[in-house]
Every structure is written in C-alpha cells, then in structure tokens.
Image (cartoon, rainbow, N blue to C red; front, side):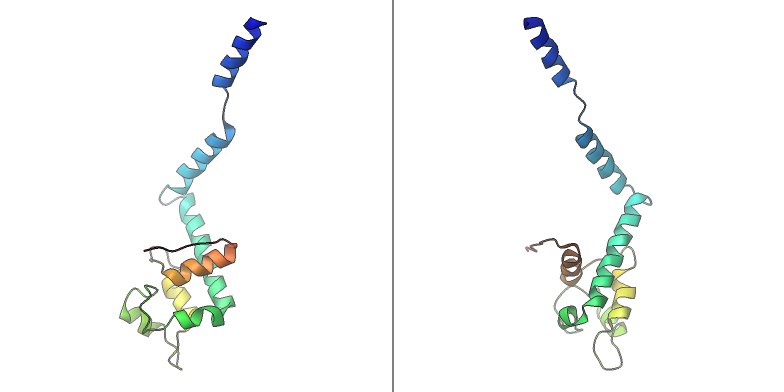
Length: 125
C-alpha cells in the first residue's frame, strides 16, 4: 500500500499539463512577427473598424479634429479624415487609422473593440 502511494506521487510530478503547454504555444505563436500574430492583430483591427462603422453615433462625438484624444496620430491625419461637412468620415478614419498594421490606437478604438467583444476595459493613466 505504501508502495502505491509513492508511485502515485511520482505520476503527479511527471503529469503533463496540456493546458499550460497549449497556452505557452499560443503565446509563442501570437508573439511571432510576420506570422500568426499579424493575422490575429489584423482581424482585431477589422472588428474594431466594423464596430466603429456600425455605430457611428456612438463614436463620432469622440473623433473630432479638435479632440485631445490620441485617436489621431497627427493634425494631418485629422484633416485627411474630414468629410465635406467638416465631420470625421468614419470610413476614411478606419481606412487610414484603424485597419492598417503599425498604427497606434487611441481610446476610441480600444472602446470600440471592447464593446464589440463584450469585454470590460478600464483605461488608466
């Protein structure tokens, strides 16, 4: 009986942790440049753009050229995204500031993605 307990303990120590292994592999894949991570990032950018375009009344008040939000990377980007009526054209904004890889995101994009995914996000400075 004592012998069985020792074998049991040895099996526990050698137990494979498939969830930890899977998470470790996923973490590695999502952090490889020019690989799976880029596709995942691009997919999240498309979700964000779709959320912005689907709910313009929710996001347009936060996307003005006068905004102190970091949604626009430069004054030129804000000017380039203005429509004929002087308001931000969400399609242009998404095409220039949300969908392309390598663009920084502001609070509006974070909020749009969080709402799209049903996640709660708290932004702290």
